[in-house]
Amino acid sequence: MVPAHHWYKKHLHAGLSPRQHSITPEQLLNHFPVTVSNLPAGPRKDDVQHCSVPSLTEVSATVKRLRNGKAPGLCGISAEMLKASGHAGMQWLTDVIVQAWNTGEIPLD
Image (tube, rainbow, N blue to C red; front, side, top):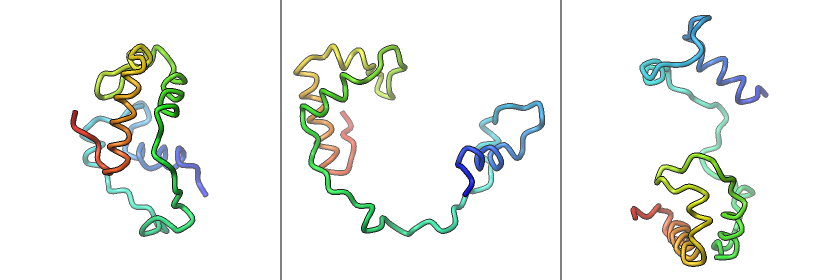
């Protein structure tokens, strides 16, 4: 089996000239569709894991492990902001995660 980064290097950069080290947005949009053979139609029975809803303790511990000085996510919230939010912030984040967990949808606000 070929490691993923080798496959991407071979197929994604196939249309680049030797001096071109990046892909333009046009090349990416016009790139041939990628198909994967032998991909299962859905999750296998042994892939399903039954996990409990994340708790406030788990969310707080995970936020504490986030590294400072990294770019914020799409919503503009940095690790430092989450860490400084205290108990109320951790409760809010836990509520958002639990809502997404139970509904399968990310809340808009």
